[in-house]
Length: 163
Image 1: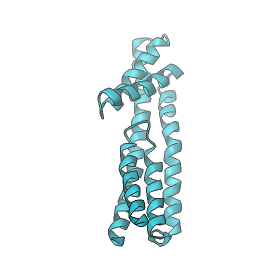
Image 2: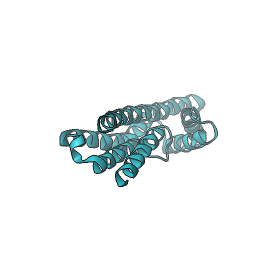
Image 3: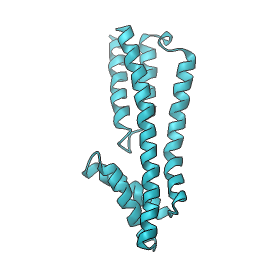
């Protein structure tokens, strides 16, 4: 019975992890990886090789780091200020709340532009900086989706083998 409960919880972590790739308040890949660990706890560590778990854990950690690095790198590359970055972050959250799922991207873009305009930048500069922040957030989201999708694939494959 405990095994079944752990498998159900692990499966829910997979769903939450995939949702977390587009919802900024959920940590997508870490939730997926936690689901993988729960599956190992339920059915034994032999399901995945230690090297597989280390590689997937490393990818998860790398993804979490890239979540912070890519938007900042995009902002800096295109000349954004801190206001542009935080405007993008706030716009992303408001966008996904009111216009899911596309509001995430549109909100980040509009938020970055409004943040830049509030910092006193001209329209062209604000648009350029907004584009940089948008690209950074978008690349980060794509990376999260790839890693979460890969972990979910391994999870489903292992689940099929053990059931």
